Image 1 (cartoon, rainbow, N blue to C red):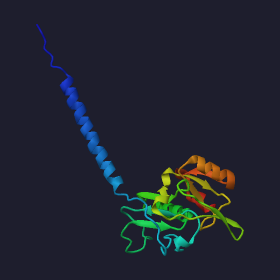
Image 2 (image 1 turned 45 degrees about the vertical axis):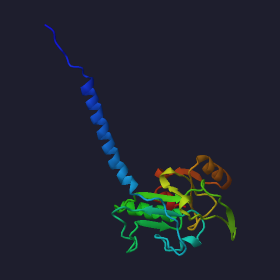
Image 3 (image 1 turned 180 degrees about the vertical axis):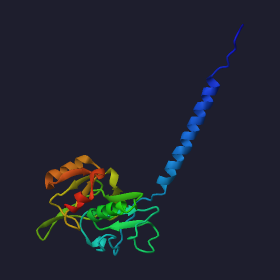
Image 4 (image 1 turned 120 degrees about the horizontal axis):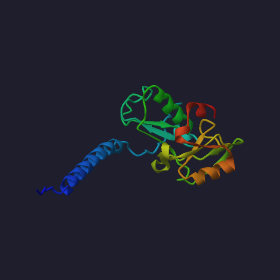
Amino acid sequence: MVYHQEPTDISRRRLLSTLAAGGVVAAAGCLGDSETVPDPQPIEDGQPCDQCNMEIAAQPGPAGQAYYLDGSPASLPDGREDGFARFCSSWCTYVYVLENKERGAEPAGTYTTDYSAVEYEVRDDGGTPVLSAHLESETFESAESLTYVVDSEVEGAMGGSLVGFSETDDAEAFRDEYGGTLVDHGDVTLETVRNL
């Protein structure tokens, strides 16, 4: 008696094809959500900080933005249809984002100034070293991808600041010159910020 077995290559191909198609559909669903998060925007003259209400362009140091897809914080001004919250400092950015996260409003994206992407300067302001501000859209980077120098001698709009760098070598060089501690985005807490 001869048993004839059909080649299993076809069923394997079908299985692999089905799995691959399912993976593509799943990935497309995930990518679709992330594609709705816009790139950072430039901060224009006259725009107030959504945390402290100071004019952003008049302040030194790192600035920030957070984008809310849905479930925008109640503190976001009425009529703010673009979903962006804007901040005069990295300090205000983190306080706003972390406090609102505790209330159930989590941003789809958070951006702060990337000092690896700019030619910055540290200047004296009445005996206090302050960092130059950069408000063009291309100077902002996802907060998650930055290494921060926290509690350096260089100040921003709210005094103590979190100075972000996309290149760890740049963050280390800044820390070596101006003091402070290196902290990743995921390790920044309200306590970290409030202790600046």
